[in-house]
Image (cartoon, rainbow, N blue to C red; front, side, top):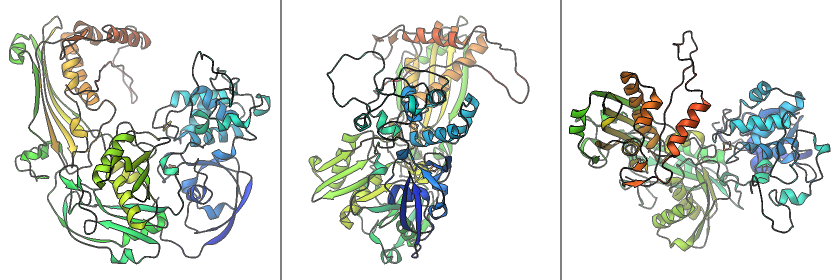
Amino acid sequence: MEKPPVDSNPLSVQLCVNGEVRSLALDPARSLLDVLRDDLRLTGTKKACDMGNCGACTVLVDGRPMYACLMLAVDWSDNVIQTIEGLARNGRLDPVQDAFLAADAFQCGFCTPGQIMSLKGLLNEVASPSDEDIVRALSGNLCRCGAYANLLRAGRIAAGRETIDSPHPGAARATGERMASLPEEPEALIENGGEPATGALAPRTGRAPRLEGVAKVCGRARYSADVRLAGMLWANILRAPLPHARIRAIRTSAARVLPGVHAILCCDNAPDIVWYDKGRLFDRTVRYVGDEVAAVAADSEQIAAHALSLIEVDYEPLPFVLDLAAALAANAPSIHGSERNMVDAPAIARRGNVRQGMRAAELIIDRVYSTQIALHNCLEPHGCVAAWEGERLTLHASTQGIDALRCEVAEKLGLEQCNVRVITEHMGGGFGSKQVAWKQDVIAALLAREARRPVHLLLDREAENVAAGNRNATRQHVRIGAKRDGTLTAITAEIDIQIGAYRAGGEGSMVDGVYHSMYACRNVRTQQTVVYTNTGPAIAFRAPGYVEGAFALESAMDELARALNFDPIELRLRNHTEIDQRKKKPYTLPEGLRACYANVSKAFDWNGYDRSVATGSKRRGIGFAAHDTTTTPN
Ligand code: FES
Ligand code: FES
């Protein structure tokens, strides 16, 4: 939600939150979510989109679930507000919280408070909800980790329709019975994250409890965005509105004199720090919509946003290119001065002789496939809270790579590594995109140093989508040669990979990997070309490259099966390999993939599936694909 300018005339209001009446002087434009999190320190209610799309901010108002980010706090003084922190009573979890633990209905846990409040709201209205009721009640709550199956189970357990042995002490009888029928649970159970406070160590059998489970279902798990330090400022980043432009001038004087502004950084005053090996922390050339132009630290989010709006930037627009094929054209605008926007010379990997292999083929499939950019959209955005103590920097960061972040930030700021400390208590999803230091980590540190105060700099959802990494788009020209009996004789793939404007990590994407590993084939050649475009930088994303490669290779295998009149699984089994053909070593589990084929075809009733051509506006089909992945380059 865009922050309106600061209102200097606060209203006195009383809010009834979790059974307590709180007297507050509030800017009438502030959301209930911000007031809960920042004024009342109830950070269990999460801010993920701040625009009514995700449900992470769900609270109960008079028992009914509502999105706190869409509510003005001053409007709700006559109502009873309940947050996740108000559910557990007298040291005992609410049955819905128990059900979440029993069903293990979460991973990162960032969406969990909102999911629990939505389910609680349903149970307030419907004593024994059906699956349909549960699905509908949770349909406004996104889980980026994809815990949906277990969320439904949690709903059934909470509704008393399913019983499950919970690994969590005190939730062992999570049957949906109401709180009164649950065994007494000591406060220490919550305090100790679900583990009994005392007791001898004993061998454990069955499912182990999540150590952080109780903290997550109670809203006590502290994510980076939840960190609040004394004197903390709020930062925001001004981003480029053009895909390619030179900055002629930046005028920050109006923003600097805005009351409540403590630090401003841009290319005129920031340290000259090399970034992405072809740019600067604040570059005088911007290369994608979203590139960092300036940053402000201020007393509040609203003041920081207002200050950004006062910064004037004079841009000289430059020619730009957004598309992979266009970027490779001979006359394409140049982004970093390299030939046809290639990051490096194409990487070629081969074994055998593909020319001979194609000549030996009785059938050749020749196709071009494209995959599009995909966004990680971690529910918790990227960012950190930065604080200095003398020359020592502490970053409370949302990161998958605590050590990598420490090393990179130390290098960028010229600090000893021992003077950088990175703390990540919990992380609301990363999916590969939080393995590196991003600009905002160093910007937060620099703002904090200039302002001599801690700085909170977490991206908003828009920035998260444009400037926090993505899965590469690709174009893959695939040729597969085969004998009539299905035996592969040759595979070739010419692969173009779009990494956006900078080398942030996407250039390491291993799209070619699956072509070399998946099927027994003596003759394989791949050529991988990594290309700059004026788009947001790509970064690792779950099995980076393998997913894109598998889409094209498996699509071509299906085409081959069709052309040969083969069952798709039969064709794959015909070309199954038990050895890593690149390293010439047997796989650790040579039969593993074959077992997967068998289990999956049984689970989907592959042989009995009705394959008649579907008609009508809704059509269902069944397909089959597999892929492997490796964690090291070929
Ligand atoms: S719906 Fe409110 S934070 Fe997403
Ligand atoms: S557990 Fe739902 S977003 Fe991570």
